[in-house]
Length: 307
Ligand code: CP
Ligand code: NVA
Image 1 (cartoon, rainbow, N blue to C red):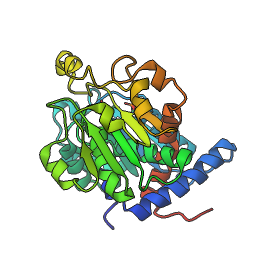
Image 2 (cartoon, helix red, strand yellow; image 1 turned 30 degrees about the horizontal axis):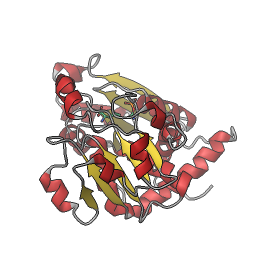
Image 3 (cartoon, helix red, strand yellow; image 1 turned 180 degrees about the vertical axis):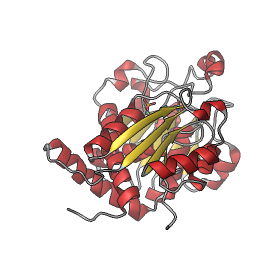
Image 4 (cartoon, rainbow, N blue to C red; image 1 turned 90 degrees about the vertical axis):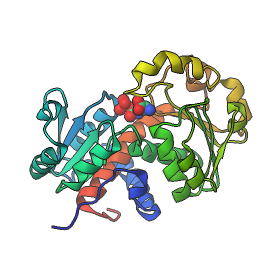
């Protein structure tokens, strides 16, 4: 049995494979919008394991699998033996004998890596503390859909250097765009990651400077899942890191605004921005569905050429 391909980090796919996924996404999305049935995954099953909450990720994978002709099963820690200490390696052996594809949302990246190392089938990272590769797949697709190639553009990340930011950091050298980042003291890019990214990453103390000249401004919640105990400290630390109209005014005219959602208006983003004309957050959320359908097709069937 050949080793399965996984999508645990953005860099698990090459530029060429990502471009292929985007081409497939365009086609799959157009077929879906035209109500044409495309069922390449009939009789295939996706298991989704959630250790954290989700709206978009669950819905897009579950609906996506149904729309491709397959079935999706939702599992969570509370109702499975994983919550009672069954080793991840044992769970991977068992689950991957019963389904064709697994998606996991959990805490440490090492959990998805250990699962994948013992899985017979492809494993997709549906968010860990370190990375959120499916999100950036949809974000870059959304950028390209609105503005064309992202190569040579500047993306400004305002706020916590978290899992979503780390994924932008992996995507930048693959697609050849520049990344500006500004975070409060203590919540910035760790020095090792920054040093490795010095050719395409620029760090700014003032978020207004990070936004200057950007083609895309993006941010995320001040407190990610799993860090709720730090909520009050973070609210104080992040107070100056809100994307508002003045900050968007520093970006290029026509710059886009993205947010992975859920958002907190009045915290990391002002309502005037997220609900304003430069925001593409609803397209971004919708594209989770289409890009992940292309991802599942690729991981289960390999490279499907234009139909
Ligand atoms: N953006 C995102 O992953 O949303 P959910 O937490 O709702 O899945
Ligand atoms: N950084 C956020 C993203 C949620 C989709 C979190 O990890 O909670």
